[in-house]
Length: 447
Image 1: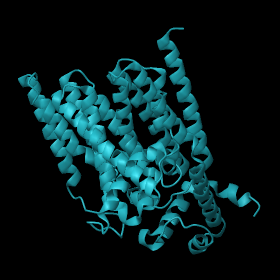
Image 2 (image 1 turned 135 degrees about the vertical axis):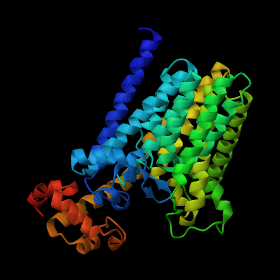
Image 3 (image 1 turned 90 degrees about the vertical axis):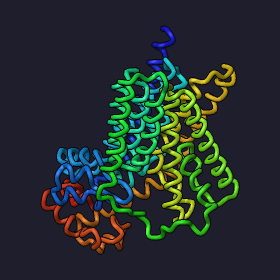
Image 4 (image 1 turned 180 degrees about the vertical axis):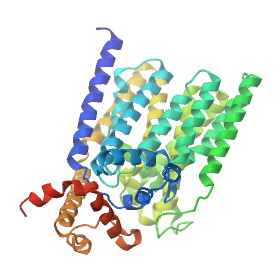
């Protein structure tokens, strides 16, 4: 068996094993229950809103975008089954991992056994909140897919199709999730490509059109936009502005297993990580400018790392008032993974001495494996969340008393009146949707 075939079998086997593992995780912990923020961002479905209204729905600082349309279609097919939410999120992350492999092949010329790192990055359970807490395709999975799609668009040789693909990926990224931050970076990348000396006049006109489309995409996002920090404690600047740096670092290093903590060494490591990622982003930008936008690797790396730096620093500004521990929430992980992919692509493409490159690849693979194996604490928190959701579901199906179930278990929404929770529960029950599909099974269980 030749090397390429062995690599294909190895990566295929790794994908199957990790996909089955992720599927088992979702099957074990996902609960058929509308939960927390879902009662808010699904408002359009309760109101029978139009597809355009669903697409434009703003939830906190971001919009829902195409994710809301996918959720609407999924709910129509499954009767609002919350477990399908989690399953669809897992499928999107698996597709993102395959897209990451494709990008590595495009920028390096071939795949190797080392590229199992890419699958370990995306088919992970470290983003457990994506599946178990409050599943929202717009907050993590679809943005991650859009970022990898943008990186793939940068590798297209044909100038016209490259520009079109970048604008399409940028449109869907800006329209849903915190990837609206990619919009400004897209403008920079397109401008650099347009001003390269080797670009022909016709191609320059194509890039000019792409810049116009990117500007209109941002204008559409901000049309009717309402500033919403989403947390009551928000203030800028923060009374302890030095906390911004470690908070940013904890967000950036969370996919590698570093969780936020009060210890000085953790904060120091996080701060160092933040500085290194910013320096790496600056270096990628310099390489992109030096290549005049003609390097697919550095165009994508600049965009992905630049976005992640913006995302992590924005999260720090918006959430640091809740404490450094809030930097480690699993829902941020999908946003950071594309930058890790870009860093891995740079390592695989580097002209380092083979011995040094191999040593670094061993370290990267070790970190990717370790963060999956060292998840005992997170698994415990997942068990608690899943168990509480099941207890609340079973309580409500037996007693139909919202206040009682909130008192006896963990509530499914902090302020029921604010979101008209009782009316929404009645709406779901009248149609036999969501957890009401399980009514007979739960009532038949011994108490």
